[in-house]
Amino acid sequence: MFMLETTAATTGSMIVSMVPFLLIIAVMYFMVIRPQKKKDKQMQEMRSSIEIGDTVTTIGGIVGIVVSMKEDTLVVETGTGSSKIRFKRWAVSEVAKLKVD
Image (cartoon, rainbow, N blue to C red):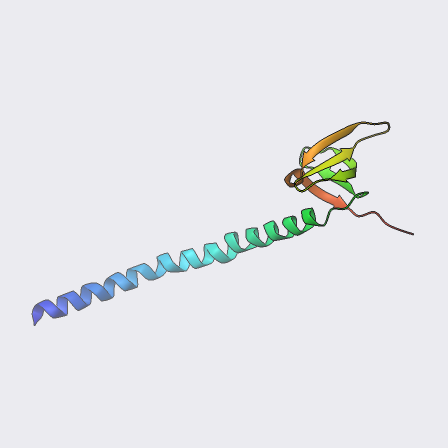
């Protein structure tokens, strides 16, 4: 009988000692993981909405106008003339939509 009481007390103390650990995991999820997933989803939506004629800025700081697109690549015209560079879609950090007046 004494053995059962000791086992129950040990199990109870283990559960109580795990509560702070579980609380830390929950806080980390709501403060770090969830906002990052939300930001990644917004970036994915932004990159999938790129159209020909949009002005884009790459993660390297290159600014240009999209002149053609394929599934996962964009051809961006930079500056005047025929300076064209091909980029992966994931390399775009900002999109400025073409405004029609």
